[in-house]
Image (cartoon, rainbow, N blue to C red; front, side, top):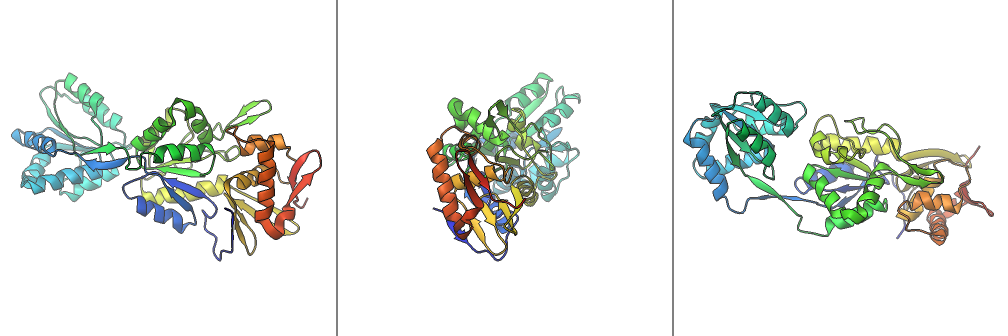
Length: 404
């Protein structure tokens, strides 16, 4: 149902719909996005759960205390804190900290380093990339024959990491603290895939690589290509396919505007983004892996690539996501009328045929000529007294009545 509303203050994300896939700290990220005016859709893709049998964690902890450790690897802040807390509960906290203090502690990134320091220890080395692969590469450069290494896992067994160390002669103690599990709502991932393909959301935020993987897995073989096309901003043109050819990079991210409303993929950092970058999907991430910076990046990026401005009958008009911003009104549009207006505003004043609008507003091929006419009628209805903005050009199509 369409909604027309007057808004005293328009935020940077007013008119944009952002999907939040995080389970842990979901409320915090949601609040940050809503403060900027976003409509937030919750779609948890994975959840963190303590391992069902803490006997495995206690057994690993006791192995760490049987003989001196040479290296201790902290992969995540939440995992390290969980390990230290569990050890305290068993009365082993002081002994575990003493064992780690005698070893060289390696942390995978700032969050892990913060947790290590909060426990009274200090990391000896941490990679700038926050990548597990770089931690492994650093370790493999050391003489490992006979060395004891405690590896705090981050949600899943690090099989290849452990195998590489053992091949070099190291004794590796795997410390399982928690596991990534499917969300309680098993249909959330599938529904989000459909929303992305339809371009009903403007951005999707990710705070873990397993969440990205879960989304790709939920798409399956039948929806995988349409999903990737939605993130890449691909639409069918008369001469083939046009797509956003920019490559992924950090912070300033994709360098070109999306083609007809591609969905923004925003990750907390490069490790989280890796499943996307391996598929050459455009993705952005902040320079520092913090929720506040992720929310700000989503705001600035959607403003840059999801806002268009023009003047009609002397009135300045801004199309921002699914909203039309007028001097005194903010008009919120349903998905289909919003996509039609976005397509028309690509070149204000130019006539777009029904076929062109169909390709731009229904890139997944689910619409038809009647859908275009219905969406235009609904768009005019939502615009109310500003319905004159959309002009029918007989036998040619539609255009925006902008000032020349």
